[in-house]
Amino acid sequence: MSLASVQHTADGLESLRSGVTGSVFAPGDPELPYEIAGFNPAVVHRPLAVVAVTGSRDVQNAVQWAAERGVPIDVRSTGHGAGASEGSLIISTRRMHRVTVDAQRRVARVEAGARWREVVDAAAAHGLAPLCGSSSGVGVVGYTLGGGVGLLGREYGFAADHVLAIGLVTPDGRLRHVTADSEPELFWAARGGQGNFGVVTALDIRLFPVKTLYAGGLFFPASAASRVLHAYRTWAPTLPEPASSSVALQLRLPPLEAVPAHLRGQSLLHLRFSHHGPAREGEALLAPMRAVAEPIMGQVGEIPFRAVDTVHQDSKDPIPSWHQGAQLHSLDADTVDTLLDAAAPEADLPPLIVELRQLGGALARPAAPPNAVAGRDGAYSVHVVGPMFPGLEKTVPALGTGVLNALKPWTTGTALLTFLGETTPEELAANWTPAACARLREVKRTVDPRNLFRFGHAIGV
Image 1 (cartoon, rainbow, N blue to C red):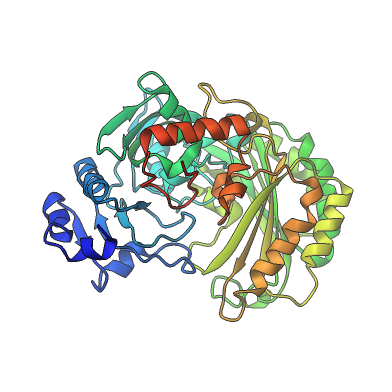
Image 2: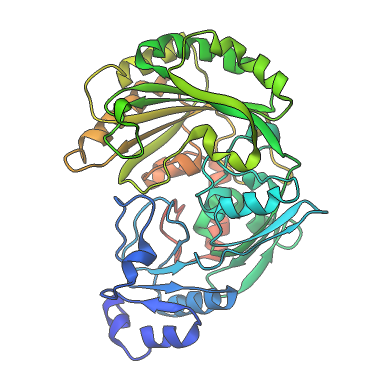
């Protein structure tokens, strides 16, 4: 049955509506654009229908409906995921956002549509913290199952390393309780294989006894970029595992309201630093970088973990954008000089952000139990982002790709999945070892032989 005929038959969308308590939206419905709106407006979805699920039973019925008709399935929560989908049934989980904390066990149960902000706040009430990323507006599930690296990653590892259980509706419509004991192969694959195996209804994740950080950021002018980056490459490797760092070349800041008027069009280097430990230790660790050049603004000090967003100051507003990521095995003097030449921070070019995020520590060690997370071999992640404003649709990807191509002598050939933009199947597969990729595809063939979950970072069968 073709997708067009599914839409117009009596057992089509009406039967879907009768099987779920949530709403179903078809093309032309005024509410549909809201349901499929993502953080990146440059990604345009053209689904067959959208079902706004309210619980695991809705998810099961929606998956069964699609499977019976051979309709591919896409899942959206906060809209930060990669890639567009067409002719799909989009399952929108954003209404499933309950978070419960077991403070004694230091475990949170997080429903599929929850954002990190909800988990951070719930955990903070008990003096605990999750392994969230640099922005608490990101959804928990996609971030975690893609790996997930944040300010505590060098100390504790990837977010996926601390998943204890997964509620997962697989293409057969079953709601499975997936753990290391109940379904070890699926548990291995789902933690790192992202949305390839079904629809997550909830995660059980570990929390950590973190109340405060010594953290923040310093902004330096483009004229100091070379001095700061060369100092950074020798300083960052000296940091202990409870400390994390990153630098972002914010090139030619765009004329947006979020950017102070006097900085629009300017280029800056943003040094971010975080230390889980006493403030005096953090001050001593950061002191060498403070001495390199005079920052034009910024603040670093003791903050409650709930203020984690203030460190990277990621944008909270949707912006049409292009992005792509890679990893570096080292950062030496030639790497820095090449990056500066390629990014040209003082040239009159379109806006671009080039971020280097320090990895290593617990991020480089295998998880226990093992999982399929890609990217443990990188010393630094490099992530390039540019706004796709009208007229820049070709220029920004060309500039960003140029930066990444220039850095290829130092790249590992892998990337963190959560920083990976749209890729070819071959480029995606290269992020795992051949053995790990073959193992992922074997699980995929077993769980989803018809490849119903084929959007985003899909590994195929």
